[in-house]
Image (cartoon, rainbow, N blue to C red; front, top):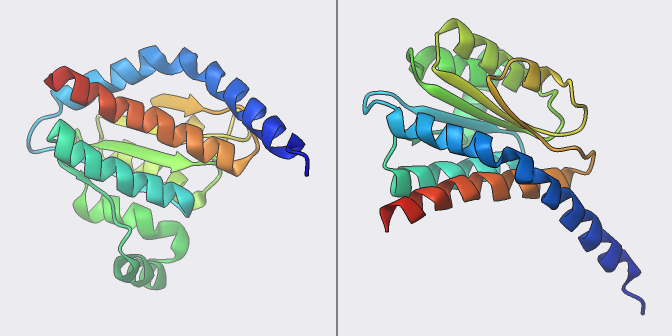
Length: 183
């Protein structure tokens, strides 16, 4: 049995990952913004599907390590309630409407960059004067999620697993930078 698929897959991933050095400065900027976040403000993190799992991981680590108030709303009861009452495209927006405050931060993760629920959440965060809207996307460079962001991390790929894994690596690098600051 030949391992050509795995060799090619891993080589393609490593090549794409090596292109992400370009984001080191943006990650440092994001870290500084998070550090300066007041105690009363929050970091909202949203994603769909696999990106929702990445969002969960990020909020756990930022709460624990960076000591910041980070929340997401990936509870199935809340999602199904808000989706039922306001439509799936509006459930994230509704969370921002009910719980978001001026100078909060929104981090969104969308591989396609075209998730309507995420675009609507970003637009409402802008109206509510959130401090920053940070986007992690892939697929098309001029995607709709990226267009509403202040700080954008775009992965030049159309492969979901590559995009999601690199989003997670970038976000966990951010978390690890807080750990290194504590030593």
